[in-house]
Picture 1 (cartoon, rainbow, N blue to C red):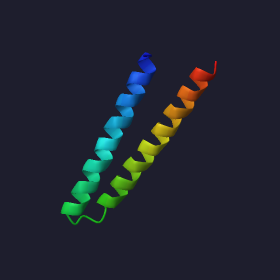
Picture 2: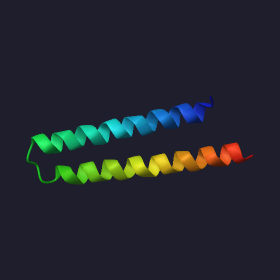
Picture 3: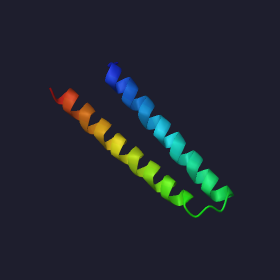
Length: 62
């Protein structure tokens, strides 16, 4: 397993946990600005996941 794959997998999992934690917090408290943090975290998770998948596809193509 390459070092990048481990780091990228760890990063994606951390962002997923962060997004879920923020979403749960948003459900429990009534802070209107918290939804923006949830959305930003979700967007960062998706971008990182897509970038990781593209990188892995390019690595295995060669």
